[in-house]
Image (cartoon, rainbow, N blue to C red; front, side, top):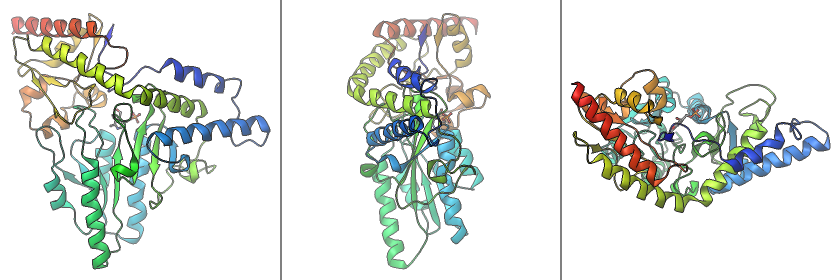
Length: 386
Ligand code: PLP
């Protein structure tokens, strides 16, 4: 098998599995229980939270552990509900290329959409134009999940800081919160919430070689949130329900491991992507590599072969146990055209011919050569059929 869809899911690392294992049986106790054995589990849970938080330059208390990034994004938007109780006309802005979970929340809150350029990079002029005195919430993912474009969060934060300053001077009491979904970026680039200037940040275990269904929301001290579930008051009362102890332990172990190998992995991805691209250049239909060459996650290699039916290519490759996708797994499974590729200005033929290739730790240089050759062979086969 050659797996090239790490943006959709990563295998759980051996270290993470090992770290999780005791918490399924020996140390299965509810961390809220009163006896000593359970208290030890509580300590381990809090220690894992602190370690995870440390990776983004935060404290354990700043994190709310959730059942995945979708839930963390939903919790993040509750900041807007809180603001709306005092300032009814508060509005949100989201980047037009956000993951479905943020985009759907944007729709729910009738958010304005911030434009991107043809590489997927945020249009800062559009942001400034749309940022009004009523804007209370801005959500921009650190890296896009279809084309890997990395956004200049610190620059966005600076625009937001200036707007806050103006509000202070003019006596506008509406707070302005900056949220970023860093699901795809955590294992690939160094992250510091302070340096990036974000108030809320979503993290995702499933993309960093941790277990699925576990995520976290970083909550800056100045941000107030509303509970997304009522119950026993776990996670600062914001996400009630018995803690997923093995989930968080696995998430933290995987994230620490990914962070330790970040630089080496990035270099490997860069050299592997070169091999893959060189093979794809041999295609009878010229490839158009998508995204931003300078600001792109190193493991992303999104490409379009205009006029080719990428879905058929995927099925042909599946027969050879090569797995890749056409876009975000959720959109692709519904047969919906990618809103990201539309936003960067691709036409229908370019969108239909697009493959999302994302590399990961198990890939080798040889995989790249083989996969590249097989993709080109599948394209040639398709051309012959036309
Ligand atoms: N945000 C981004 C950027 C993602 O890539 C994903 C996963 O595909 C999610 C959110 C949703 O994550 P989950 O399905 O774990 O809730």
